[in-house]
Length: 320
Image 1 (tube, rainbow, N blue to C red):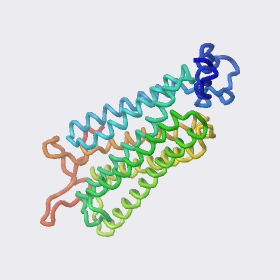
Image 2 (cartoon, rainbow, N blue to C red; image 1 turned 180 degrees about the horizontal axis):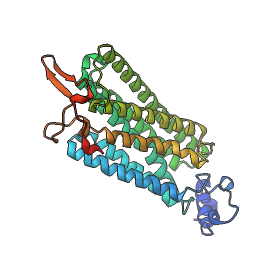
Image 3 (tube, rainbow, N blue to C red; image 1 turned 30 degrees about the horizontal axis):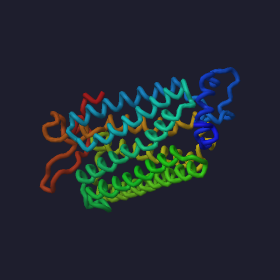
Image 4 (cartoon, rainbow, N blue to C red; image 1 turned 90 degrees about the horizontal axis):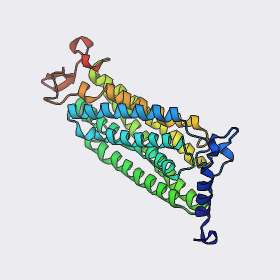
């Protein structure tokens, strides 16, 4: 195929392939922002990539073990999200030695944007469990509807992000790339709005339960789960705001081309996984037969009610 029959995208790919042979990113004075072949706008940090890949690998293994022990199989969505995060950060490790490569760049973009959607699904499922335990009459929606409505919203978000990513990756020109980016942005914003609506419903539930003095006492197992859910929801919102602004600016925008801001993606998700591991239902709401742990509730004639003081329940020592 002669150069005259190549598309602009193919010509650029051919040029960058030849350019990569001399590894200009290793040369003194290299400016990534002036290099059209470098899709990042910087050279991804090897240390940062390894650190996050290792953190997500460890936390994903922890959550997988907790799911197996607790038999809360629906929470395997956390494992799925963790695997995508691992792939994303390993791809950035690969890009640290070759920031010209299309494969790792597309892989890290897709996995790091889509992965947290599965973490959001876990939050909806956990909130449904809390509603059942404290009383569904305090909730705006029935417990099962949280999973149905918000996981459906996550699915729509995934489809939009996946479709946008595919269009952007295969686009032959700038307009096609921008179209794909805009579709991805719609998916991210849609997910962010859904998470905010979920947070509003959770606050309304808590307000009603508090008015009836039905909230769990401080430092009891269910209280820890409630705190973890709040921290995790906040982490998803912070990360969603960052990604929304980044995509709105485009791949050549300020946030996308300055590596430090990727911390707004990685750090909140690490915090989410740590919080959900420490307050996992294996510790806080074990199923029958899952282990000899004290229940955070007491049976009464009115049904199950939260224990009202720390002295009434021992928080699992094996959490440490």
